[in-house]
Each structure stands twice: as C-alpha cells, then as structure tokens.
Length: 104
Image (cartoon, rainbow, N blue to C red; front, side, top):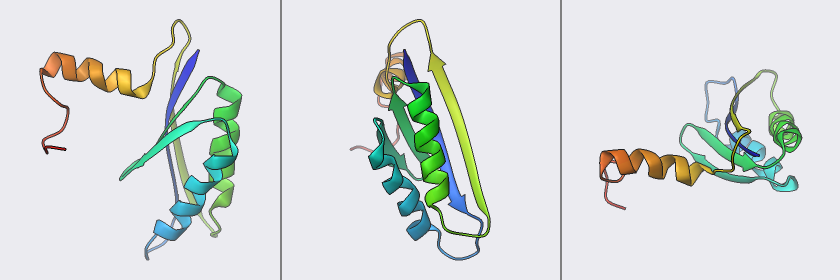
C-alpha cells in the first residue's frame, strides 16, 4: 500500500507564517515518512496510513498559535504501490514534456 498526501499547516495570522510552517515541517522528521515541501504545502509519502495521521497531527500541534489551519488531502492507493514521482511522470508522458514551464 502506498499513501500519498498533501499537507498544509499554517497559523492564521497576518504576518509571515514561515517560521511556524518550518516547525510543522520539522515535526515530520520524527516519523517514517518521505516528504517534500513546495509553496502550497508538503507532499508526504508512506506505507502506513497510521504513520501519516500521526505525522500530520504532530505537524499541526507543532504550530504554536491561537488559531491553526490544517488541510490534509490523501490518495490511499490500496491495490498497488506507487509514489508521487510516478504520478507526475504519468502526466508528463501524456504531455510529452516536463509538467512545468521553467527549465530546471
């Protein structure tokens, strides 16, 4: 089983959120998950749904503010193993190019 998720955790504030978001991302280090942070959230991959929920809870609780907004979107593929990179590669195969408009 492969579980891929998009996690977004942020304090509800008018100032910069980056310091608190860094705390949420750092909390993921204690769990058996792979992750990559992007401008809109953090993609998490794991073989254990329980580990995903525990990691997401830790990230949520790491943000020290009066109000915290957390969104967790899960793709729980139960019939075969995959990963986030394979999902992007499948789209790129249909596009016939990289799925971005900048050369990297």
